[in-house]
Structure formats: structure tokens, C-alpha cells
Image 1 (cartoon, rainbow, N blue to C red):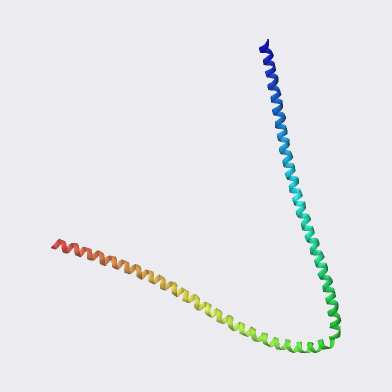
Image 2: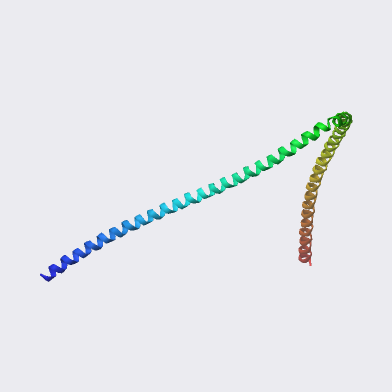
Length: 172
């Protein structure tokens, strides 16, 4: 009777352990899911903070641009007033500018002619360089062939000298 009672108690305890293990597994899974959710929210928060910082930088940039534009407008207004006063001087400068443009056109024509001559010279030198490189390659090839011939001749002489020495020993 005690054994049966102990067996029932043991089964009951095993069932409680199994239920507790399932509950622990469920809690662990829920905890992991909560951590993932928290990590996702942290990433969203980080992205929102980055976006907020970007907006703040953009706002600062816009404010700075607005300030700079206000300064430019003020400067341009002053320059406009000064320009109206200097309209007569601009007429004289225009006459000088036309004269300079005519002189520049003459210089430009000379530059084009000079450029054409330089292009011809560069083409000529390029052709000479190509020819020189080709001749250099041919000379290197010829040198290699001659070195091979010299090596072959040296080997033949050496072989001939050895045969002569062997022949001389055989005769002696």
C-alpha cells in the first residue's frame, strides 16, 4: 500500500516536473521573443534617432542657408545701387571689352595654329617613338638569337674539345 502510494506520488511529481519544464520552455520562448521584440524596437529607436539627427542637421542647414541668402540679398541690393551709379563707367569698360575681345580672337587664332603645329609634332614624335620601339624589340630579338647561337657554338666547341681530349688519350 505504501509502495503504491509512493508510486502515485512519484508519478504526480513527474507530472508536475513535466508541466514545470513545459512552462519553463514556454517562458524561455516568450522571453526570447520578448528580447527579439526589444532588439527590434531598439533598432527602430536607433533609426528614429538617426532620422531625427538628420532632420536636425537639415534644419540647421536650412537655417544657415536662409541666413546666407539674407546676407546675399543685402549684398546684392547694395551692389545694385552701386551698379546704377557706375553705369557710365560700364559703357567705357564695354568699349575696352570689345577691343579686348577682338585682341583675344586674334590670340585664339594664333593659339589654334600653334596647337595644330604641336599636334603635328606630337604625331611625328609618336610615329618615331613607335618605330624606335619596334627597332628596339627587333634588336632585342636579334640579341637573343645571337646569344643562343653563341651558346650553341660554345657548347659545340666544348663538346669538340672533349672529343679531341678523349681521342688524344685513346691515342696515347
